[in-house]
Length: 340
Image (cartoon, rainbow, N blue to C red):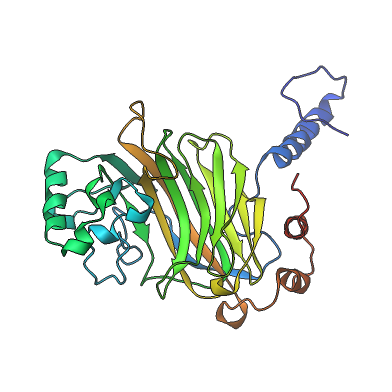
């Protein structure tokens, strides 16, 4: 067995063979340390169905909307720009919101940056005026008056949705308590649950959370350790008819059984929330503006039947010949065996 090591050791070897051995060792060690290539796990018949590489001059409005509004043409109020039920402290803004001209999005050098920062007095006053125009029952929600930060959300609702496939982003985020980045999916037809959380994280923990919310079963969540989430990593989910497998840097980290109410087209969301019951509110040492940076967002659909993946994970693997260790690892996890 040849061990990859950063320590050089003298070796008696013919000069003519030295270069060949160096090349071989480089390739071997690279294979031992480098993560799998971007994209879906091998062995599934998938084709690219959506991609934004953020190579333009700004956010592509043909691909993204910037609130929870039902359709792209719907004017979004504060009620569609935060989740008051979570007591989140941010409002997801865009330049058109209340005429404030606040743009939390910057596209530069192929990276989308979402910035979260404390509200100034003028922004808070404009939001209070908006709330005062609501009927009494709607403006009574205390969480809507407790918002204190602006941030950004991007959503493909009304632009792209899909049932089953593989979904991946490459992202990183600022450190700090109360920061809550997410990459998730909701039903195109509206309603909640179901929900697939491909990635959720807290800025003060080296942990990611991967969940399924359902009307048919209790919420299921798995945790995974991630090395230095302030550096870029790839976060993905393989959504099959009978389960969802979650990946970090191309390696499987969790698998959850699917539920019947998941079997519908869903759209993608990415956002940087601030505060709330779950992560807690930011502490004074958190540095603002805080950021979530996104290198790309991509999706793949199953080639057969216009993207409909019929059959279980095991049946799909059998059709592909089960030639790939990643798929075998996925099925071990599906059967409850620990991942190593």
